[in-house]
Length: 315
Image (cartoon, rainbow, N blue to C red; front, side, top):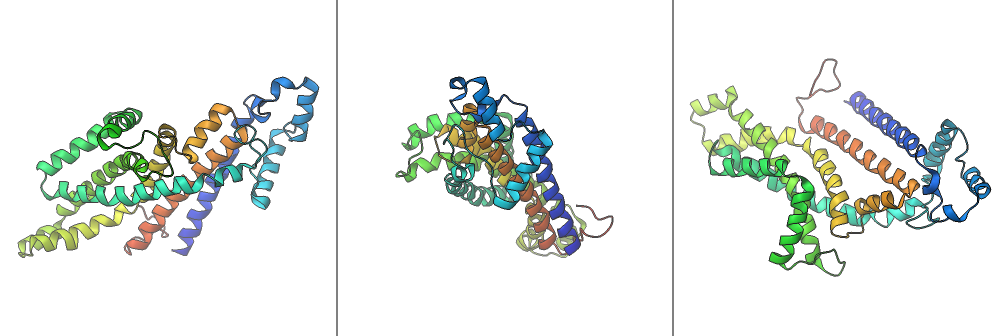
């Protein structure tokens, strides 16, 4: 087990390293105006070259990448913001937004996963029944309708029906309701879909049929055997739920003017704040990769039958 954990951690670190390299190189291919804030047109060509030299942007790209990695590892220095908050370290800019995004993300996952699993259980109780048809319709509609469309509809009609503010306000708990509902919807859908599938797979296994032949109570079979075994692979959906929340935050925070990391990324892209865009993309990518790592490790810990460190093992 230890060998597998070390191997997966090293692979995750390597993946983050590759993403950092790719993002760094791609941003260096963009126009340099994003490193000057609003001063680019005010400077002469000679002054621009001096500024680029001072920032190390005239060095070969491999040298720039090495210097960036060295600063990142030794000082956790991701550079300075050039437009959003001029000459302020991007770590400071991001740190001010992290608590808000984490709060919305954790609440959405904490609500969405149990509701989704509960819906999946109800769908599996009677295949083709009312709950199964309603849940399948819900999952199908949510996947068919583009996310920005239903997000905007929830905002428009939710404010009218619930009387919630159109945008986020710190002094208004009600302004958190619609964003959290919107973030929960895809989490509920994916958890309901997979919970139903795992439950149906377990119901059709031979040991369940044997228990039915022995007249074991249906409730005992359903919850003590089917549900318990179906929950094990559901742990792997935790990182997917986190990734879905991150993606949703990018749009939802902008839509509701929530001062979190998702809205900050869009603002940074529009403002061409290259250093801030680079830091946020790397951060979101790292969260996603280590979220997948968490899912793999949880699978190994909750199910003692899994021996992922052995040769030939498969998930």
